[in-house]
Length: 388
Image 1 (cartoon, helix red, strand yellow):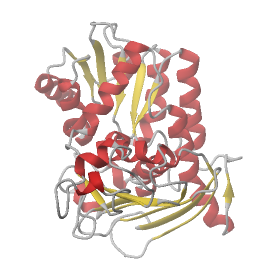
Image 2: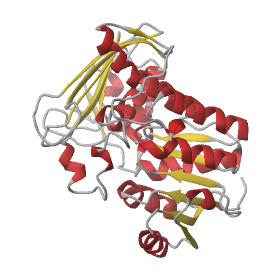
Image 3: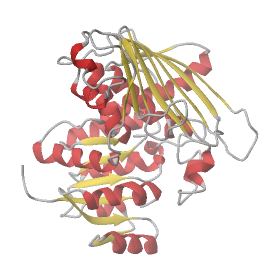
Image 4: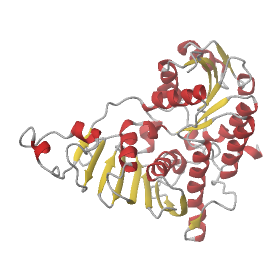
């Protein structure tokens, strides 16, 4: 692997950049922050100084042409992802785009094609794939520890004020002109996670969104999506924007067991980051190593060694809480240095946008929507980047 550090430029130094991207770049041994871009001059100067960037810009079109920048991280409001990704690709820069990749399918696939044409890598910043509990869960699913997966569900439930009033620097998440709303904000994370864990594409979608509470929040506050995958698995995603504590859980059900995973918060009835039950017969020697590591004896220290098969019971796994953003950025920089395919490709991001946009069509026709989509779908109030 090359010892040359990768030069990074970041567009949109808002809350997620401050909380996640800047600290992660600083922690990455492969990379160095070279430039920051904000439309506000004072903010650009201040952030560049704080995080040690040599340059600051108010025009992203100028920043992406900087000779020392190899990677552009786009953490601006959703509605700007399209035009900024196109500009970075045309300048020959690799791109990481905050989720959601875009706000319409046409935007998303145009971004994918622009990066392909330019020969640069594109990754969506779906950091949930990089929490260790999700990585371990994925490995165990692929090993067949819970048998053949038949159904799975995932959700993100949290009050819109939790992030907006405590962490957000701006109010773009409340503006339909700049974002697709909570369907995209939360759904892009969890639908992507479900696709990855199940390992199959979604072939049809039915969904519903509804505003159940009258307040200043402009979006539907409840979302449910049912998905049928090409391999026959039935998946479900749910969310709301009025829960006063965050609820985050993914549960995967197989013919030989089940597992539950959580990354954003625990609670009394989902108290471990990863819990697994397998009904398969394992001896101590054949039990997966990660389960051995967390399988403490209940009665007598060698009981699992002489009991064949080992008794069947739930195992809770508590991996170290390594920051998923740092692991994600390190992964992308390694992909550049070693010319490997990123874990969350632009195609992954575009397919998620199709799934989410299909919910609007599903509500229009009151039924299932086949994928891939055959038409452009634009969220209400949003003006696509290709029309600006």
